[in-house]
Each structure stands twice: as C-alpha cells, then as structure tokens.
Length: 188
Image (cartoon, rainbow, N blue to C red; front, side, top):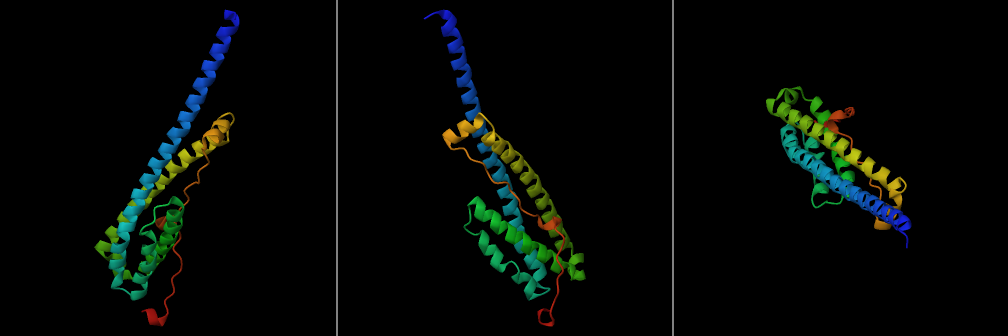
C-alpha cells in the first residue's frame, strides 16, 4: 500500500476513535453529575423531612387536625429510595406542608412564636437549597438529553444504552399560594 492512502486512513480512524471515546466519556460524565445532583437534592429533602416533625410539634398544641396532616405522609418516606417514588411522595409531602403552613396562618399566637418563626425560616432556607439543587439537576439532565438526541452522539447512546432522564419538577411548599383552610366547629 502506498503512504498516500495509509496516512489519511490512519488519520480518519484515529479521529473517529477519539470522537467516539470523547462522546462516550461525556455520557458518563453527565450521568455521574446527575447522580451527584440527585444526591444534593436528596440531602435537602431529608433535611426538610427532618424539620417536618418539629413543625408538627409546634402546631400540635393548636389542634389535633393540623398534626394529623403529616401522619400518613411521613410514612411515605420511610423505605423509599427509587427516584420516581421519591418524587411522587415528595409532591404529596409538599402539598401537605403547604396545608400545614396555611393552618398555621389561622393561629396568631403560633405565628408570633419564636420557635415557629425559626422553623419557618429554616424551612425557607431548605426550600431555597432544594430549588438551587433542582435547577442544577435539570440543567445537567437537559445536557444529557440533548446529547442522547443529537447526531452522531445518538448512535453512541443507542449502542451503549444511554437514555433520556426525567426532569425534577417538585413544587416547593414555601413558593406555592397557600390554600384556603376552613375549620368546622368539631376541629377547633
């Protein structure tokens, strides 16, 4: 064979090899970053989950109904580790947390309590952490999803089983409008 043919073929082979390796490594990098971002979200969610019993305790003295709001919801978290189940359960807990905060609005003495105000402040900080982690997670997921759908990286994704990931979309308890709370005479 002539060098005029061998060198271009070698160059093209080396170039394609580096392109394939680089693209594969991008997929691995994004998957690792997604796992890291989910871990950050998980830590913030666990912090929020640990704060909930303190909020419930602060409200317990003001009515039985309000403390029961979380009794069933707290059990959802125990033993759940799959992302899909955790997102569904966190949505339920967020909704219940919003209801609990709305109930707290009905008690002026509770709203003025230093302990309750500190708990609310901590909850706000945790919700901000969740929001920041969610934005980071979704940014990385968007990059991975774009890579999975783009040509020629879509070929590598199909070959090695890389798939699109779901975005994290959890409402935050402190950013929702508080729902109206109506008490019947029995619950007071």
